[in-house]
Image 1 (cartoon, rainbow, N blue to C red):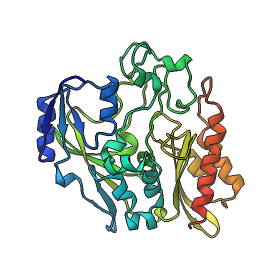
Image 2: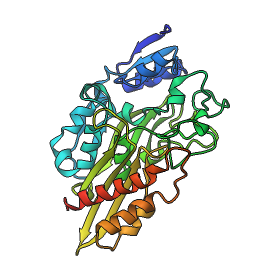
Image 3: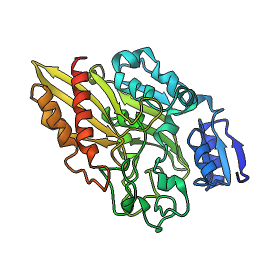
Image 4: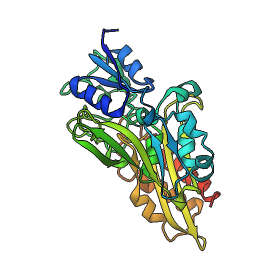
Amino acid sequence: MREFTLIRARSAQEAVQAMAAHPQARLMAGGTTLYDLMKLGVERPPAIVDINGVDELGAFDTSGARELVFGSLARMSDVAADARLVRDYPALSESLWRAASQQLRNMASLGGNVLQRTRCAYFRGGEPFACNKRAPGSGCAALEGIDRGHALLGTSPHCIATYPGDFAVALVAFDAVVDVLGPGGVRTIPVEALHRLPGERPDIETTLAPGEIITRIRVPATKLGRASTYHKIRDRESYAFALGSAAVALTVSGGKVEQARIALGGVATKPWRARQAEQGLVGRALTLETALAAGFAAFMDARPGHHNAFRIELGARTVAEALMTAAQRT
């Protein structure tokens, strides 16, 4: 491992100042992704700003009548076990429980989890694999490679890497926002707008400005939370990334869907909101047939590659199963 300068920040503002003084620095929260990428040589920061001592970022509060508030340093396992979240927002809790391993959940922070980078083997493998995300302009080896786990939605001719996270998918379903602090002050970004589509610049992954850090995540309080779930399909049940996942939430009135939320994970280049599929359910009775139709509607714009077309039907059925589970909680 290469040498680097370690800076321990004592406040969020101090962390921002340190990032400004060291433009190529990386933040360290739980470190569960950063350490991996440094060992692989994908990340080679000359400086690391450790924010684990910033107590103001570690608290979370789910008791509010208007919103749930999570500090960016709150640990995944602590939030997943929160009693109100388990009862009133199961999709949020389940998205955390079904991510990583217990040991990693104990260390990983919410902010770091939301910002984790792709698990594309060509991105992580280094030379001789071409990767526009790692080395802009070098090409994308995945386009003609083994793309079984690569994205079906939001791809470009320059990158088909899948966003790997779970929690951000559930956050998108609930219209969550992040508050960020940077050299220009404080601003708020919808989680749905936090991650960028790859386009021609896959190496620019988020809409964060240089030196900005996430300070907290806010989720609007909603009655949709109670009848919600996070359904994740993977090759093995323990510690594997999704072949397809869905965060869904419903309200039902008079036997018909009043509101629906559907967000997809494991199948797109960013957390993916399926609004057309949501609208197709409104005013209809939720049956297995209508749930499956919504699932296929969510994948209407899918662009399969050489080895991943099977995940269109898998993803559609994942959405349908999630909707039927949520319906049992109305």
